[in-house]
Each structure stands twice: as C-alpha cells, then as structure tokens.
Image (cartoon, rainbow, N blue to C red; front, side, top):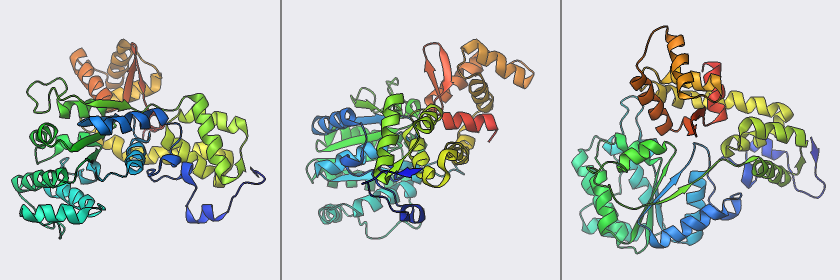
Amino acid sequence: MTRLVGLKYHPCYLVSGVLPTLFSVEPKESLQDLFDREDEVRKLREGLSRERLILVLGLRRIGKSSLVLATLSSTGHPFVYVDVRRAYDEVSRRVPAERLYEELRSSLLRLSVRERVLEALRRMGVSLEYPVKVRVPAEEVRDNIAKAFDALNELGRVAVVLDEAQYLRYSTVGLRPLLAHVYDRLRNVTLIMTGSEVGLLHDFIGVDDPSSPLYGRYGLTIELRPFDEERSRQFLRRGFEELGVKVDERVIGRAVEELDGVVGWLVYFGRLYLEKGADAIDEVKEMGAKLVKKELEEALSRGPYYAHIMRAVATLGRARWRNVVDYVMAQLGRKVTNATIARDLRNLVKMGFIEKVNDEYRVADPIVRYAVLKGL
C-alpha cells in the first residue's frame, strides 16, 4: 500500500473511523458525495415536482437512503424522514403504534420549520413535546399521524420519506387507508417509500390487489441496481484517491468480482483496506456474514422451507426450478409439494434474498450467499 503524492491522507482516519465521503458508512446527505447516480437523482428530482408517490427500490445496502436524503437536501424543501425498520419489533414481528408514532414525532421535531408544524398541530389538539412512554391506542396514533400529515400539507411542498416501507405491513395502526387519503387529498405532500423487499412493499401497497385502499394509485418507480464491473472499479479507485492510497488493480479486480457491485460491501472493503490490505476482501465477507446473520435468521424463520431453498440456490449458484425442488427434497429426505416450494421461492424473491433472471434463480447479494454457504 503506497501513498499517492499530492493527495491528502491522514492516519487519524483509522483511529477515528471518520473517512472521506465515498467510504463513509453513514447515508450520504450531499449530492457531491454520491457516485454515478446522476440518472436516478434526475428522476427523483423531477418526480418531486409532479408525483404524489415515489418508490425507490433496490437491494439492501445499495444506497437507497443516500439517494433520497442527498437529493432532498439539494432541493432545500422540507422533508420528514421515518425509518420504519427502527420501529419494527423482532419479538412480536409487529410495528407497534407507539414506536411508529415516536419515529414520526422525532423526525417532525428535527424539521427546520418545526415551529410552524407544531403550531398547526396545537390548533388540532396534538402535542409533540414529549416522547411516547406508554402504550397508546392504535386509533389515537392513527388520528395523530393523520393530523401530522395535515399540518405538513399546510407548509407547501413537502416530502415524507418512509424508509424500508415494506415493514408497514406489520403495523398495528393500519396505515393504508390513511396513505390513500394523503395521496388523494393532500396535494402538497409527496410520499417517498424505499424498499429492499420489493415484493412485500408491492403487497403492502396492493399493486395487484383491487381491495387495497392504495390500489390504482400511480407511483414513479426508481430502481437502484448494483454497479457493473467498470463502475465498481471506478468507485473504488475514486475512494482510494480521496484517501491518498494507491491499490493494486488485481486487488481491486478481486474485490469487484467477489463483492459484485453492492455499494455497501465496496465501502466496507475500502475502509478495511487501510488496516488489512488485500486481506480486507476476506474480512468484509466474514464481517458481512455476521452482519446479515440476524436479518437472515429473522426472515428465514418465517417459513419452514426458506432455509432449505436458500441453501439450494446458494450452493447451485444459478438454479432452475427443478434443480431447487430436487435439492430441497434430497436435503429433507422426503417429498415436499411443488406448490409449497413454489410459494416459498416466490416469497424469497419478494423479500429480495433471491432474484430470478430468465428461468434461473440466484442469491441476489454475494455476502448473503457466503453467509448461507457458511451455515450462519
């Protein structure tokens, strides 16, 4: 590892964990910190001026939150950001009403125009001054959330971001009728929903369900894909240039091949390279596997055959339907109906763990595949 002459580098990056833009793990909040997402930024900015609902979709750790936050910050317009996943309770597998309300309350209090929002809510009989510490009836929470949207609508153009919005399907509040009301009646509010479990987000919205209150509401969809090989190389080169570090192209090539263009893993590699050198690739795989273990265990526990199907697809690399069926039955030593495997495979695609390309299935994230093969 050598320094690039003339570029600023300081070893305190290793000690403090603070790294320049590209290799920082926090969601980006400035457009200049995004890499090669100009087309997606343009679509999002155009959508903010004319759409009522915007869906930003893509794998976990692909940069959805960064795209949304950086683009919104560049507009200068107020926005509310709610991380729905933070409100999710893994024990009950629900999003309790009071947790969701607390996430919204905290975000409203961070608004630059919060005094105007607070005043509007006071007129409606709602106070945000104190956090929710006791169980609140779902009806009261839903009513307060509705009033919060009404107050936001009075500000003029405003965006409400529901990050990882597929978790709303577990909400005890029942938000779909309310969100349909926001879409239909509150002309100044743009809803932005991000989702890594694309199929589950579509289920929540009711894309194919005429009985859903949100059915038929048009939404602009922006999909973030992993970087291709060349863009992944450029991303790593740019990040290392920021650090004043020159890295062997063979090491960069191996990192790109094994981390497969997923921005989050490329970022971790860039951070760890300063300390581990070429061993950072294996370190990312080990660390990443531990990181995804919890979300994998929680997701795979939802169905009795999910883990077997994931192991089949991970082992085979690219698998056709019949390969998956044969592998699962060989694992179990007994017959499972085709309908059952088809249902569970379809659900794993909806959850974003498996993707279907033509007639073949593959694990979408290389680190998730590594974790499954390790048996984590």
